[in-house]
Image 1 (spheres, rainbow, N blue to C red):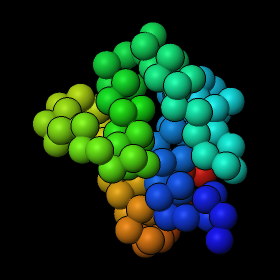
Image 2: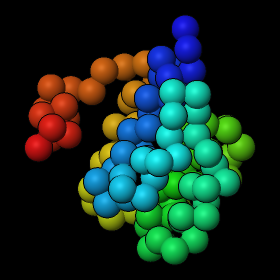
Image 3: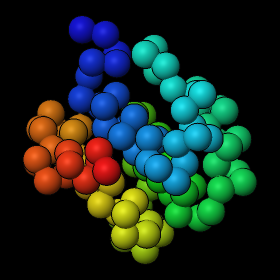
Image 4: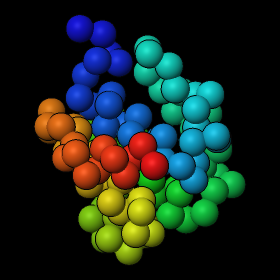
Length: 106
């Protein structure tokens, strides 16, 4: 199994593929992993909620516990809050519901 086939990779990629940041994060995602230095450089000029999303993705990848629950609940807008919970579902190795997959395709 390669890194890009793991549940953790899928969850992190799901966060970094969020529509409002995708164009800025996409160049720093590969099948071998993530360029966190470049992603954090990009995050420095993003909104507070977008920065939380990047840091949450990093925390899912590194398991350092650097993003607090209150940052997730207060710092993410509705769509990114939903995306965060979808990423947790993916990280657990579970499939997104049909409804969530249809929303992602829209």
